[in-house]
Image (cartoon, rainbow, N blue to C red; front, top):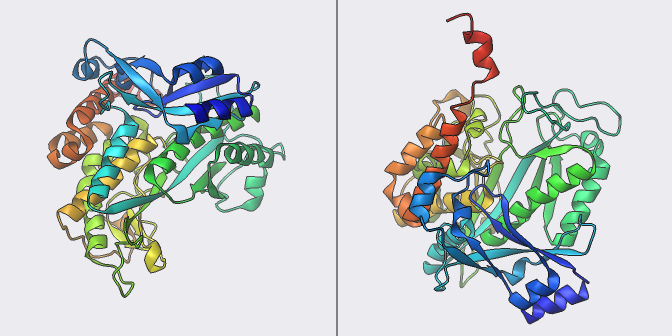
Length: 445
């Protein structure tokens, strides 16, 4: 805590946001005076924060599985995550906390712990996974009525974007003041942006983060979402990471590039001495092919997520793999031997980055442990082939319930609580009557 105290004093910090990412990737926690935080070195929160749904309500079945007495957790700040809050009016810091029971054991429901568990499984084999996330999102006109469809915002020209402007520099520059704030905010927080591009949808953008340690990159993705929303608020627009925010526009993904290096040699274990792809690389792909359907609820966690998975919608519909093929679920970019990797294109932007990265790495890990073999690489369009991914959240949860290996590596208690939360969210959604039902069923059936 001494380094914390010195940093807080040097930066004249008056408040500290003590943050814990919950199951949905929402920031939970407390805001403390800096002096109190420095003296106490942590906080306590009820374990039930990990049984909350995305609406903020509690999933009763998850609550009962987790701990019906709702015991306290001891939250410990991770010193590597302390950062300023650059949009705050007063000098404010934020720090991500890890969750422990009062006996010192880790809380296995915490998404950060789940990712650490998967990283440790790799480490036990002498491996270090490497991750690079790509986050897509939309800028939209402020919307105060949830019954009203979202619209693209007006940029500096005063006109909203119409149609697709993929890779357009000028379309990005329509919001140059906003992105200046984004870059400044990210630099202040140590969030390392690789590049910014305009995606296929109207006012749809993508930010790529530099590759590195999975936990560090999950922290950055988690913080970037918050940062992007704050910068958008400042510029009188919304930024949304919904998987499918608008009917006639492409969905938003979180592509996960993943590779593995040898801890001792620092060499990519997916390449042999001659620089060619080896059995470990193919087994990793095969593990993704076998287990991603069961992991789908971690990568596409909401009812809306599955609206993105449609044929010819710029999102994968199956788990074919191929070299530099953007129609498949598992793309292998052209690269040098040391940078050999697979890009998981299945995850949607609304996923909790800790859980999605953990699940994706877990699938590859299982493939390597089981020495699986993938299908042949696809050289044609995967959109012409059958849909292999779950059609909805309910189907995805059923596949997770049937996958004992995936439950074992991620944690039985975690998967049971997560499933209970998602079932509760699904049941809540099913109570809602949509405009489509009123329009087409009211007088026709």
